[in-house]
Image (cartoon, rainbow, N blue to C red; front, side, top):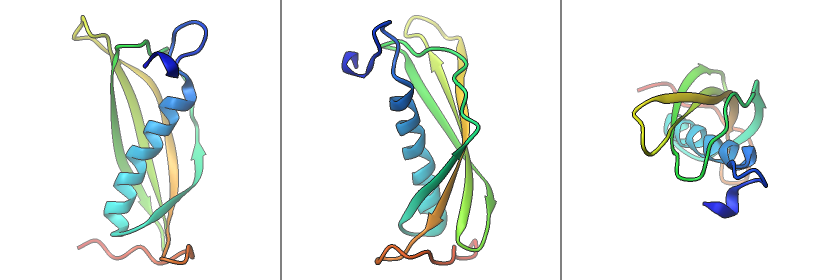
Length: 112
């Protein structure tokens, strides 16, 4: 939306990062079967701008699971509304920790 843009009319990087965090958080919560918290983001570089009206697709993949944490790689791609061509705009690895109801870390359950 226009309210999410910088003075040049491109989408703020922070808005895109928030969407990526939501995608990673969804993958983390499913894998951990419960609440998770973001603790780190690694390697984000913005390769191309995203314009108002572009379709943004996010792809999240769990790349590592530790005792209480998970690393999730997220790639963001854009497609102009009048084209079929897609471009990667950024990617990053998000680290999440599984947490209990009191906010303390808890073990990630084994994969079922």
